Length: 513
Image (cartoon, rainbow, N blue to C red):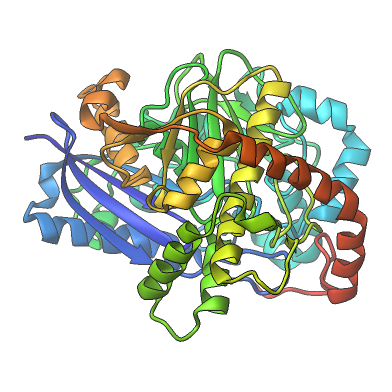
């Protein structure tokens, strides 16, 4: 039996999987929770030592202990993580501050505006294949240089979460091209390499070497072996962003294939025949040469249901509260009895890219109950996902097959509402363990133990969720689409009232590492 290991570091939890690479059988699985820190409105951070490296060491040891296998039994490791993140480290690889997270961190609004004005929005889109928004790393690098000059003066290398872990495991300084695609305006999508002109944001030697996700980037060092339980010399792949590994785990690989990941946020990845250049979407090379990806993501999804749980059922244990609210949401009819929710409770990413947008429950009356509120929230998330699907079509890359994955697939209202809103069936696979399983598959591919089509054997389709209530949701959709346009100016005004000194893009006088 040949065994591969996959580890994924998510926003609130890390997961690990040990897999028999000949069959795809899951041999062991483990989880480790952690927190996302929000030190100021619009900021989102992780502790790279505790949350990223700590997850890898803990889960590797837990998987080996659970399975009864030794470190030498693991033939390759692949790690994925949230991304794109921005972490400056010193000469010895020590983090100089907390890791700045992906698009949910909106601190660099002023830097986005400055770079757009200096470089030109069309030029950035043409070069990088994506517009500057909160997902882009370039403005966050500029933010660190401007607001934390002491940290910036000591910065020798710039990492995302996967490259930081890769360096700890192997000593290699490398990143996959899919992740690099989000480091606008530093990435040249036409060439698939860092741009010749880095626009004064950093030095070339501060950026990782670029590889493909399933390439072997290095081998586990003696120090990393002691920390993880793996054998020295174990091959480690370059790694990738968690959503991409999750897409791999459910068979997304052909043009038109689209993953809808229902988790803390909704993230959508579509495989495209050619680069998709639309300022409302994100674009990057796919995990293998010759293919492309178009991406989109909401800012608030599962985090909204978590917030509602605490608000509507504060005295119940977490699982019991979710069970009660889910049952009440199912009892509420499609359309939530006229209640419409804009799920912009942390601003919004694609396609409106508005960090000042805010959440709305519209149409409330005294007969609505908490089940209606929960259903409206789930339907609002589904409507925002439809907005993404329609944006793909408008960009010339319509959605084909939809593969649904993530914790939200266990919520029947969320799952059905998404199918109904988009108007296409969603395919579910046997395993929904997610990115860690996809990582184990990528590790097997790196050793030539699996072909990309073998994922259908590893994790076959088991059912489809077909649309049923399209007419109801078409009416709902019409209100949803108009509601933001009619209230956006008021959202912006009240957001500024609430946090006059903490707007995205505002800059504190000093910040601690």
